Length: 300
Length: 237
Ligand SMILES: Nc1ncnc2c1ncn2[C@@H]1O[C@H](COP(=O)(O)OP(=O)(O)O)[C@@H](O)[C@H]1O
Ligand SMILES: [Mg+2]
Image 1: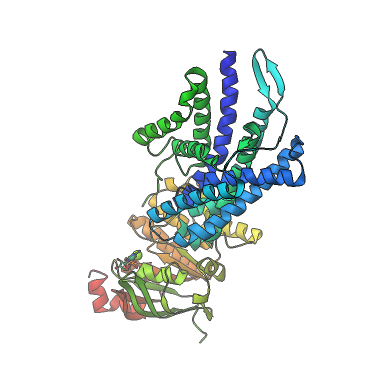
Image 2: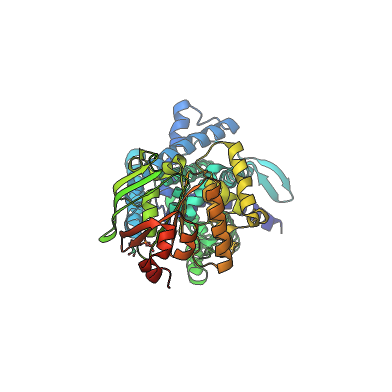
């Protein structure tokens, strides 16, 4: 039982990380109806941006809250800029092109970033700065609540609440939902869809930036291909929740995080990555719209 | 006489190789209700789309003496042109209130927005009880009322209405046309697109008849109601 509670904590912590990345996939899908395969590589670049920035200002061995926050902000800024550039240069020119062209372009951007990363950063893993000390905050019996997990949970939760606020309580959030529902009608209301789309990339990419620092803290080895597996899992989480649905992405990510933790704990760590593919296949067969995905109830 | 509020000259629109509008010209004066009538596929919706800037066009478009073609779609709303699109286009997953707030997207005068919201709710009391309801769950008539109020929330000087009667029961259609008439009496200039020519002509000052992308007739609404060709082809007499 105590073991189970421990795995629960770990699973939710892992799930929050998947959620931060899954949100970027789902938001871009919601607004452009495309899978931004480059998203996981934006995340990777965020990790490297934080790594180099920490070394540059000399805080790579200076664990603490201020280091954590500084690196999160730096990574968010770099990721949003990169997301903005990708949208502007690669996707916007294809706004009226067939879906397949956009899809292939997205894969191209992803490969471009992965291999440029190997050239620029080097292919071998780097050790991420020590963002925070990992210590046991409190323990009940065998169950340990560690500072890393609490940090991941708190930061993840704050980011998701901020997103919730942005989407549902602000004018620009309302415009994002309007463009995602019907860009033509939204532009009849005076919305500039291009601007809203660019902003969506900024928001999604900066959430990936937050995720990259949290992952760097927890698993401090970064390399230019680090986005592939986590990106895949976050993508599966988004599909599981119902791609395009923000609440669904968080739900899907939690299910992914928890089931991965449980599979490793009670079955075998061999199945860790197979699980994601298994879940993807099962959803695509039984519930292709995802758990919360539904076809809109527009009346004609 | 002062210059027309909207002046359209030689409008041409292509959808790929389909020539949907062929040199359409007309004008709308301040304070008028002008109808564009015509059969399905005549090019009515395309005309409104060109005015709002959703489809590219050739020809001249002037609004308040300003060349509209230099103004991007999303700026035309701020200039004073709002449209209630064909098929209503409400945002189904947003509440009625949020839909109305979207209508006021181009404005920044919080006090004025609040006043216009009250005005809309007075005009369409049904919206008032349903402010928190998702727009997708409204009936067709309610969605049409929402689409019109949403356009009004932009505080337009020219209101474009695309087939407000489409698919609605006669009683609801009569209600909606009453409200359109009332809006005009309070000073709103309206360009109304309709297949329901009889209803449209009854509340219009002037009307134009579109056929296969060409303007084939124009006259006062009264004369068109008595015109033999119109009576035969569009009024079913
Ligand atoms: N998006 C589009 N793509 C191609 N053809 C279109 C499109 N929209 C309208 N058309 C064509 O343009 C013509 C005019 O259509 P429309 O303006 O919708 O007519 P109306 O509103 O009078 O029924 C029709 O022949 C229609 O088939
Ligand atoms: Mg039409």
